[in-house]
Length: 477
Image (tube, rainbow, N blue to C red):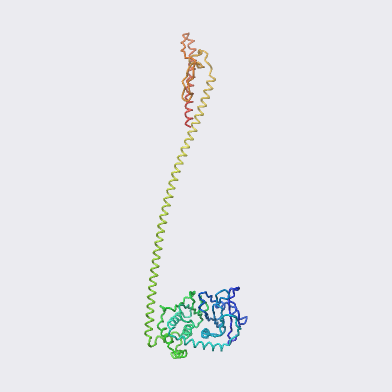
């Protein structure tokens, strides 16, 4: 690998491939940069429509083989996606050179037809970068950026080598980074990879200036619109930044630091702590202290308001939970009452059904008993009828007298209930027969005939009674 050469690559978004692809390059086809996805990942800034006004941004990172990657990016809507077309320099390029090139190298490609690329001479490129860097270092000593620079340096000291997301800046990120690197050098961190505008943080970039509404993924975060309220070295760093701003140029600042014998970050902060008060130094200290206290009070007030709001929400949720619990209890009680009522009604219905079944069983048994009695009566009647039919006639009793086997046709018989609906007509009245006063033999001969007639009459009465009873119980059934 020729360390005296810096290669150029131009990447554009390929809609069919769904990612960034080299459109032009001076790198060999087997170069490691092409084999990894780092370059395309860094090139993709994913601009939004509202971010297009921010113009170009710069990113400096290191490849896996130690080479520096300087990326100049700008919004490109050509491939139907507002992404960042990117011109990349690959070679032995460090953070200082990258900041100088980012500030105004005249050969950056800014869109349009693709240029004819060629490898760049590193020494000539370094001279151009250093010239641009000296001009920017003079602008970085402006009093207007002193407060934002103080907050940025304090945040870089606090996070060390960890990633840092930066928002709320009003000055050019390049100027802030040039001044912060000139003050801290390699003492805070050797990793000065940066991006002057990102929608999200990349893992290969330590210092990230976020575009509006950018996504922060690191714990390190600083808002340059306000002082950090927990920085333990804020006063010393403010003195340090004031000394840097008061220095004439980069050479005067380097000589001041070299004379102080500073070799570590602790040396730098201790040196700033021993600074003698200069004009406006006490005013600055007082301003910083007041601003710090004011911010602490504001944070305490905001925390108290948030706590009160949280308590109110908790009380409201507790009330809702109690209301829901009471409603659930009332509903459960209503359900229990309804269930008990249904169970009671079921028990009542079951009792009524059991009573009806018992009554039905009794009636069924009564019917069976009456049917048996009816059958018995019928058998008795049939037996009596058979006996009447087969009973021998009495020859010694004269015809027409009481006890004869044939009733007198002239006799009227009263109807019995349930047996007949009217009187039976008789053609003549019953005439009492004179008692025969014959011999004893004749009188004794007539007694058995009369006794048979009496029995027959009794049997008929019994039959009529059974018929009446049969008719009565049959009507009840």
